[in-house]
Image 1 (cartoon, helix red, strand yellow):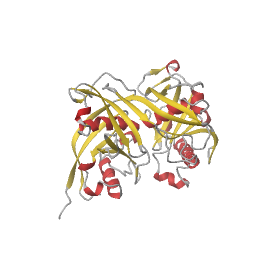
Image 2: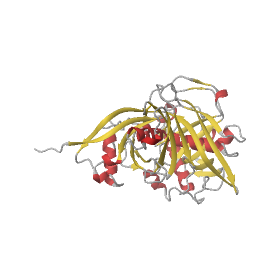
Image 3: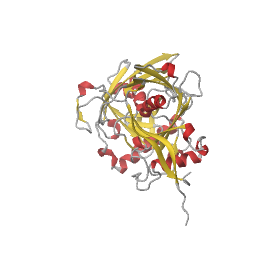
Image 4: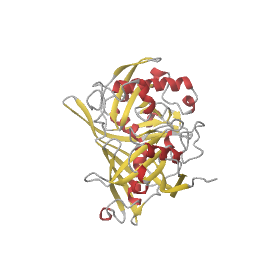
Length: 397
């Protein structure tokens, strides 16, 4: 009896921020996977170990959470004045699809470091010691990200003393700049940062009721609601929501209603194949709480509390893209996020999340009555965990 052997594909397993994923160079992928399509999706699902009805991803590289069920393709950039193109796939854990609708802000950090590891950056631009500004074209959303990657003795510096809540060990700090991160392509508002044209909308959510919501396209399409309006304090950790199926259903209903109102989908059933976007984040004024790592977070050290949903479950920390949305909305007077932070104008915000706190800067302007964000900045870190080859059965794609 003949058997189909496994094939091996060069790959790098990386942590970026509070996420990790499998990174590929485009030229290393099998020919049938170098272009978008079903073969690419099937390969990435098999690499990660999805779809898995047990939701454990035992037979793959995934870690059975939205933060660890990810694949990335990096290639020399097709855009002028950029070093690399970065394409991100969010692999569903237990259902049969890969979502390409948005970016992963955390793995954007890994994309910058990987570009240097892979030799994609012109050596003339890489200092022997210092910081290299890696210019990334985010191909999912057609945006520029600049990763300021530390370099030591001509190589990416991965170790250091920068601590990031949600990551156990310190590493070298990488500063990310999200340039012009407002989404220009979707929404009934003609591509505006606030697609409905309003800072706060009344959102009718079937089975839930009427909620106040701020809907924004910045970093990633996001629906903000007040924690108190849905029965929360804003200090919840994952276990408070994870096993509550009724709560998860209500939060998904909010996400679907927001997606419809933002013009991201035309019918509710389309949300099943677009789970990565939009995000739902509920916010509250600052309060003391104990983080998931037993760190005492003081209300006096943060501007607000925020909790986010990712792929149907609460995120263990905060997505990088949602952090951009939080900082941008907090900088615009009148949004729910700005109100939770105490109102007024600001160019940075520090918010509490389940694993600790995060500070993000945002530069917003208003022109002819329309708000836009020119840049958002945050610090993350990245590290190679393993490199070599990933193996999949030869008939997997």
